[in-house]
Length: 173
Image 1 (cartoon, rainbow, N blue to C red):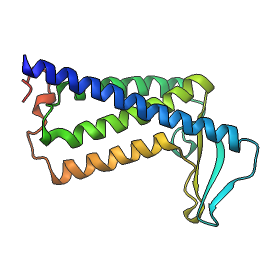
Image 2: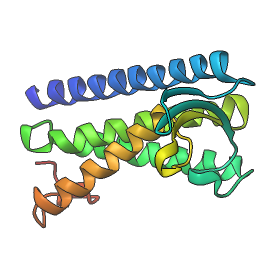
Image 3: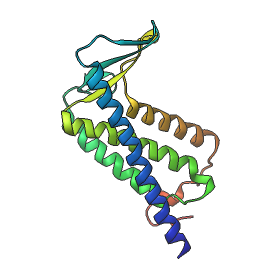
């Protein structure tokens, strides 16, 4: 009974934090569209960082432009996989990094998914001019942070077998 309650709490926390982070992403995109669309870039640090409005109809760096159906299907599959991982991952201190990374990844995927469904493109607005990095948004930051966290913990924290519970038929730890 105690594990059922812990699992429910974990899922509620995941859903709430994912929704809040996606809402923050959507709000920043709204502000960017309202304040930057059809206007010159707003320089925060001259030559380094600026805010500029861009409608990205592809994935990262505009790749696969115009393939919104593909992105919709991919996002739904990714979100299903994340929910599976969240449900199966034990609610213990050892797996907090996995839960955090999965939540960030879900929030980023959801934030950009909402844009693609509502507008047919993703609203990007953060531009690092100094390195000419492609324009990005808050959801992209979530996805990048989740990816970095996953890489770090998979390389340096967890051992072989720590994720056997994700396989079908294996008991949760």
